[in-house]
Image 1 (spheres, rainbow, N blue to C red):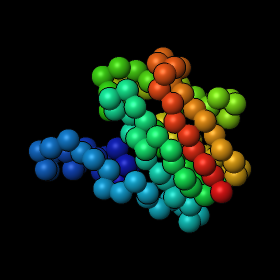
Image 2: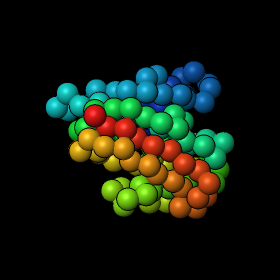
Image 3: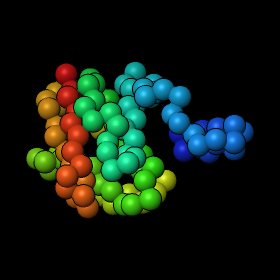
Length: 113
């Protein structure tokens, strides 16, 4: 079952908006997938600490479109509409600042060790 299907299942079975049960989910190879929600024109969490090799899943819960675009060009989710998500993988340790290309005042960061 995909993450999107899990959320949809929870939403239908609980009758409430689905919220990821954990901000970290195990993925193949022992790496984790971390969830960053986009809601209220903010990235949550605004700063994410993780291990190099892990993935970050950006989920847009806002009605407006958003992106998660790295300042240094390392990643770009592309434009995400409401309910859409994109997953990126950070393979090298470092600090990655990012912003929303549609709403440049929205900012976040990923720190990979």
